[in-house]
Length: 566
Ligand SMILES: CC(=O)SCCNC(=O)CCNC(=O)[C@H](O)C(C)(C)COP(=O)(O)OP(=O)(O)OC[C@H]1O[C@@H](n2cnc3c(N)ncnc32)[C@H](O)[C@@H]1OP(=O)(O)O
Ligand SMILES: CC(C)C(=O)C(=O)O
Image (tube, rainbow, N blue to C red; front, top):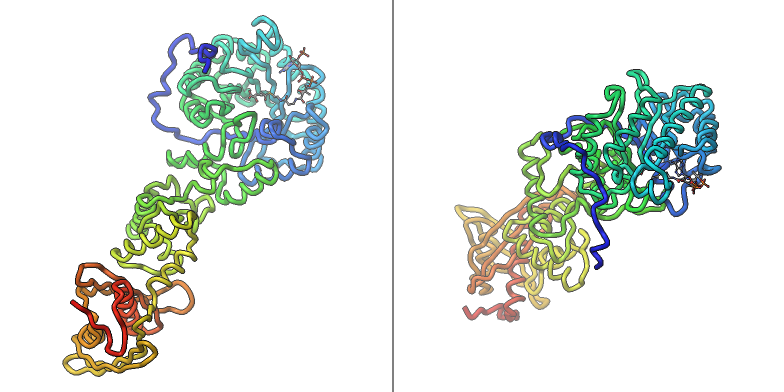
């Protein structure tokens, strides 16, 4: 690769400006300005139609934006008509301020104010490019001539605003700020401010865009801090950021920029915008949770926001997109699933105030995602914790820890062989087929018990189509039946373990029992019984475990019953 072709194209402030490094976190949310309908829209393959813009505008209102750049009215008929529609049909709520963008060219400014006629209030946003590259290559102008574009535009805005009814606030962006010498950017902004003379009542927005992000975020933060410290009329200036994401650091730029003194951020939903996009306001806003700060935007139903966004922009939210992506709350891998399942249980038991579940930055439910099917999904990388969690959450089956392990391997193997993710119903089917009410080759039919100082049983068992009755005794009922299996059928095992619970999910409320037995070589076999009757469920669990052992050891079953060598 031809690395000699590249070098740094940004400028550090003339004096080091690093106070932001000492601020640990953001203490309040900035003023958000959505530029979806302008910067986002201008980057779409097919910009939105008027009706689509109207629908998107409603979406932005629902999310809670109070400042919305609605377009570049001089750009096209649709842009112009959209603004007219908003004004004429009184679609702008009183607590929302719309914003429009204009170049510093008189016919464009005139058209912009024509489009604004009748508006109650609006931000009029003037820009011109200031970077070395743009001055030299695009405008072919000196610094003074570039300043003149800005100053002339600022004067024109003032003139047209004076001639037009409505409250107008002004915004200026030294476009391509990140490629501009910081002193020059400061000078041009101050020259514009001198024209507009901001007051407490009518503050001016100075917007410092990372039009193209060309440095690491700490450089941008230092540039912002320097500007914040040296701008004239600072108390009457709202310092705004407009990061793009060329280096993949749009969010970092915005966060460090806020630490450095910015009070406002322009961005878009899911980061739509020119090239790699504008900074993603969904991410920035939800990141506020990690500072314990209320972002004052409502993303309670992110699935609905995504579906509207995708429909209107024809863009896709990537599966790994922070917060919004389909897979961002999903763990496939075993150790993550195990930690999440334990963390969720801990949270339930301890009634924790703060969200601390491992691997999950926020509670997915807070943004309209669900636990079921979202958090833990199963493939060949999964483990017993996650697989057990799915069975428990979806089907109310709380397997003993040791059984989870053995079942976990069965499920992983199926997923590995089939080379696919397994859905909860497939996992359930594997469980039912492998463990529940297994009745071949030794089929449990029924039992009777009598109780003295011990239990006596008569148990009916079918083998090879013939039903036999056996008598047995034991300390408990399950023990009595287990003794029949061992002493009369010759199916020997040891270390019987047992667990049961009510199945609260699904139809009816069945009892679920789990039995583990160990053969003479130390191999453990598990079975499960599900039945309306708790005793029957435990007997079925025992027979299931026994049948698994008989089948695995290929023990002969005939009229003479099973004769074990050991
Ligand atoms: C970083 C950003 O996102 S900035 C916003 C960019 N958005 C858009 O461009 C979308 C909407 N734009 C448009 O529809 C059109 O570009 C219009 C209507 C604004 C202007 O259209 P046109 O005049 O036909 O074409 P074009 O945009 O190519 O104009 C370029 C001219 O404007 C000048 N120019 C560009 N930006 C500015 C500015 N901010 N202020 C003053 N002049 C400017 C250029 O130097 C060039 O001048 P030249 O003709 O002397 O060479
Ligand atoms: C108009 C300005 C703010 C812009 O969109 C940019 O610089 O990216």
